[in-house]
Structure formats: C-alpha cells, structure tokens
Image (cartoon, rainbow, N blue to C red):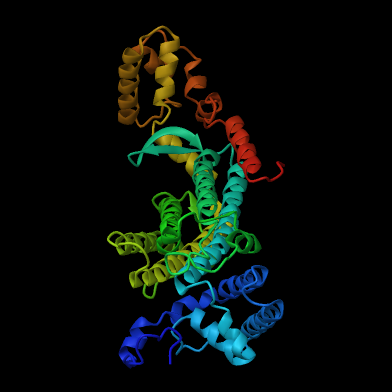
Length: 460
C-alpha cells in the first residue's frame, strides 16, 4: 500500500504509477530532503510533539541513509514514487515505528517546496562561482589588451576605434549584473515553506521559525497557501539563467565571428574546437555554437514553467510536479556553458595586428576628423559633411585618413594643417576617449579595477 492511500484501497495501474512518478528526476534532491527531515525531527522534539529519544532515532536513521546514498551502499529505488517517499519508506524499514512519526505536521506539498528551495539555493552558489570565474577570465584578458585597437561596430559595420579590452569588459559588466540578479533571487528564495503542510497549516503547536533557522533560512512564508503553491522563486531563477545565457550567446556569436577567416581577430584553442568529417582544413567553433544554441533550450525551460503556472488555482496542484525538470535542465545547461566559455576566453589567441589593420581600413576615425574640424571653428554638421567627402576621396584613391596627403586635405579646407595626422591616428583616437566608461587604455584599466573590486578581488 502506498503511504498516501487512505480513503481507498484501490490500486492505481502500472501505467498511472509510471506517469505519476517523479523519482527519475527528483532523486537529485535527496540531500535537501534528508536535511529537511532532520530539521523537522528536531522541531517535533523541540515542540514536544515527539520525544527526544524518538527524534534521535529518526536523525540517526536519516544520517545513515545519507551516508549510504553518498557512498553508493544504498541505491535509490527507481520504482519509488518520489524521493520523499523513498527516504521515508527506507527510514521506516530501518528504524521501525518511529519512522512513521516523521511526517507529523507536514505534507509532501510543503516538503517538496522546501526541498526545491534548498536544492536551488545550493545551485545558485555554484552558478555564482562559475560566473565569477568567467568574469575574471574576461577581465584579465581585457587588462592584457587594454591598449590594442580594434574596430567598434554598430549595425555590424565598422563604426569607431575601441580597445579590445573595452569590448571584453562590456561582457564583464553584463555578467556582473547577472551576479546581482542571482543574489536577489536567492534572497527571495531563502524563505521556508515548511509547516505550511498541505495548504492550511497544522493543528499541532509547531515552531516554524525554529525549523527555518536550523535549515539556514532567513524567514518563513507568511501564508501557508502561498507557501505550498508558490513557484515564483523557480521562475525567477529560470529568468535569471535565461538572461545569463543570452549574454553567453552574444559573446559566443562574437567569438564565432572573430575566429572566422573574414575577421581573424582571434584563434580559439584546439581544446575548444572540432574538425570536419570531410573538409580537413576546418576548425569549427562548436563549443561556442552549442552555447549559442542551448540558449533557446533554456528559454524553453522558462516558458514551460510560466505556462504550467499561469492557470493554476490555489493551492497545490499536481501540475506543479512539472517545475523540476525544466529548472533542473536550465541549471544543468548553464553550468557547462559558463565553464567552457571561461576556458575559451583564457586560451584564445588574439591577433592585435589584424584588429589594428582592420581599424585602419574602415575609416573608423572619421568622427575624430570631424571633431578636429570643429576644433578649427567649423559647425559640427559642416565638419561632418566635409569628413564624409574626405572619406569618399580616400576610398577612391586607395588611401586612409592616416595616409591621405596633406595637399589633398587642404583641397577641401584650408583649416586643415599637419596636426590632422595626430587627430586621426587610431591610437591617439582611443587615448583621447578618457570620459568615464570610455575606451581609452586609462579608462579600461579603471574599469578593470572596478570589476575586481565588485568581485572582492585584489587589483594587480
């Protein structure tokens, strides 16, 4: 007989049992489930609902199950309905009648909500650590290339000269915001639902705050119906992971472009590329492409849970069992993406000369020429048009703004002197952009210090 059978002794079909079972995916929460059960046993004894001796028997039994599961001495029965029932049945088999008292003053509804929160709080720490590692890799690479000029793009067209360090640090800033979102998510997740029971609380004189503190929660949910039916914390985590994956995908796209022959700004290490089954010359950025592709998968996980929850009346509904596979999948997907991206960043080779030559060929110092002319007294719109005409002349003559003869410059304006070459020098262009957050090497190094301070890391 199943532990939940009360009103009826009728057996469910094997097909229904398999359909109803969640052990295949919720078994990963066994540590959280046992931690919650140990705290619950302590609370029951603390509140005088069971004896101290019974509590010690339950705790010893649960600790033994945990040790055996960790060591492999005990295997999870895949025929069990879920991890909660498996552990309770195993406990009762080991300690006898005392095991049947563990479920006093709780329901699977608040138990599973507790387990999921505990488990995901641990996973947020793992994602946070991996994200920090990626930020440090990006920031270190940015610092190493703080002086290297590359074309900055808008509309995927060469726009203005920037430093490669500035470009990489833009991603560091994105991932810092991700850390902030995960921190906020963890704060709202760190609320204990245990003691809500099925939906209405319990007639027993329990101490929810005591049990919450044992588990390290900051507070308890204020409404028992909300406690068992809330999955906002999982949706918020999925949303945060989706944004993080979007950032990974954008970075992946750039690395795919930069490593192509058309750009040749970087070369990815062999450890993060594959070859072709038919074209021996190929070096494919498969890890970056897979990271980009898996972003859509995580978006799907978010949409899945939003759709599951959108029409559910209070309180608990079995639909909510569908929360775990999507959130587990997103967690399992983002972690290797973060780890692999860090490896790709740390090991990639940067061709600074190639980026510099691309910058020279793209007339991306045209704005600086216009600014130069403004400094000579021309209105900006007049200077803008004159710069455009000079770019057209360079294109026709096969010149760049840095190589165009002064005599040709002066055909367009007598205001132009020898100092124009200082104005359009690419390195000088980026050095002059010292505004806060700008692309100058000085600013890049200031941004590096900001990122390291935000992570609590010492500056070199």
